[in-house]
Image (cartoon, rainbow, N blue to C red; front, side, top):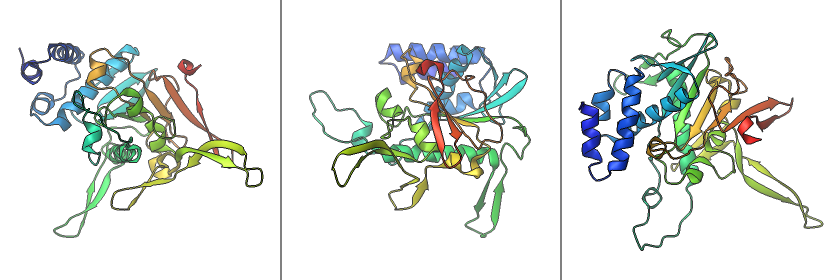
Length: 311
């Protein structure tokens, strides 16, 4: 038994079902040759941030393999390199931590406990926007200011390092599995679109338009929400795919898939294409249940779900 299997045996000593399905998933991942050099050390160090990140990478890898895609991985660069019809597609995975989410939301009620609350939609969306920004900067690089010297520190990204090619699509793949419970609440935002859509486009809650004279409803539509607020009051944009600075990101893939998916549960997958992407991702490649494209109508964009599975 190797270190990872031993760790899973200890972590899930009281849950043989989860232990066994994660062990099988890990063995597949290892056989596919996708383990990076830090996998065993990080996966077994007891840190949830590392553990769930690798769970998501393994679940994502299995999803891509089931799609029939040729995938590989290396110690440097995005998590997965996909060879598709002579072209390369890069996929960078991230599993946001539940920072800023209410404890009552993150923990299920105990047996016999009755609890009333609301879904922290905006706090959850902040984790999505943060994840998208972080992985965009992994591609394009980042400039920070040294606290000691006040000088700029340039951290080159995958593009500057020559890993992601000039014409290669780059996809950010987000698992929301740590942000609460239940596929529907983890996947669908207050707009009734997936969180992946809300993180990329300024789509807000549904609003009802009432005629002031007749007092009758004349329209029902999604409101425009170009930003949301952090707890400190700072505005966070929700229109990244209308921002040319994000043109390096071809699409965002979103799902609640985590340990439940590793153990065989069905999970929804949404894919949102960037209309300003420098390198377009071909439609239909990543086997999403819902696949959104924004069509330029001159003075506005029209968002459409073009997935065959939605019809």
